[in-house]
Image (cartoon, rainbow, N blue to C red; front, top):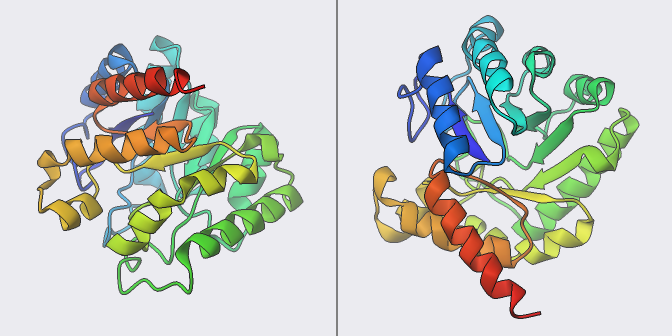
Length: 261
């Protein structure tokens, strides 16, 4: 899953692809590099990020989705917390909703997913982007995230969403310390027992810098190490800024794993 941030303030590439033409060109480049999904977002969810208005988010993402849908043969995902943006994006050509706010208490987003039959990525986050890194605490992060996923499936089913539409994301960096992130990465195989595909987003994230001291643009090796571990653990979707490098690492990992059988 290649990342197309149509934003001004995303932690890694904020502003680089904020213009419509630049975002579309970047999406096309990612497909050429081997992306099998594109995730388009118009609102940063980095720690401390402030929300943008619904109108602004729509202005940013809808033209990009419309143009990419007409030019690529891979599925498009809308990375949004707003039900109205999700509905408009699905009408414009997206087929997935990537919802970092799956910890929501209302069912408006889930009703959109149920009505459209879209795929739905339920990501675990403690708190909200503005507050999530303010001393996150868990009694047992792995158990707590697993219970969250089980509860989300129940809520989604009540709203009319089939389990077949759902993908889980443990939410690396979303309300987690370095230790929480490492524990979740070590426990990924256990989450496959829930019977739903797993998506993982580790690309260039701050926990890699916390462990290694690397700056944002120096975190590809750490990102690839976590990615290869994730693939070995049964994760099916890798969300990344660095598509070409990630595709090569994943294909090599898969080739080795096939010979272990």
